[in-house]
Amino acid sequence: MAKFVAAFFLALIALSMLQTLVMSSHGHGGHHYNSQRRYGPGSLKSYQCPSQCSRRCSKTQYHKPCMFFCQKCCRKCLCVPPGYYGNKAVCPCYNNWKTKEGGPKCP
Image 1 (cartoon, rainbow, N blue to C red):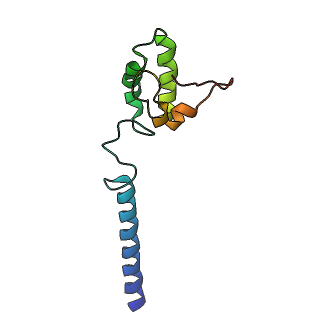
Image 2 (cartoon, helix red, strand yellow):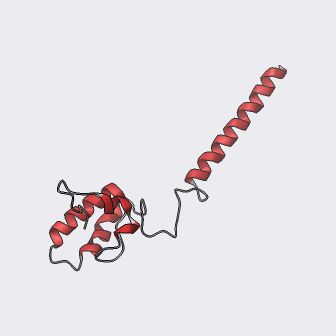
């Protein structure tokens, strides 16, 4: 009986530690949560891509291709750099995705 009680308490402690670990990685204290971050890897949800790409592509004369590639990049990287041009360093995935020829894929 004593072994059963000890095993039960050990299991409770293990579950408590696991719950704390999950809460810290997905809750307010974890690295997945950052309400201050507007740009950078994973800063967007996929449903936010069209509006962010509209902002990004609003000043180009090639609006249709810009929107196509921006949304493709946004869905993969879940970020769109600030501004209308440049600033790609804040989103390494967006910046480093290249075409077959080695040019930038994302506008």
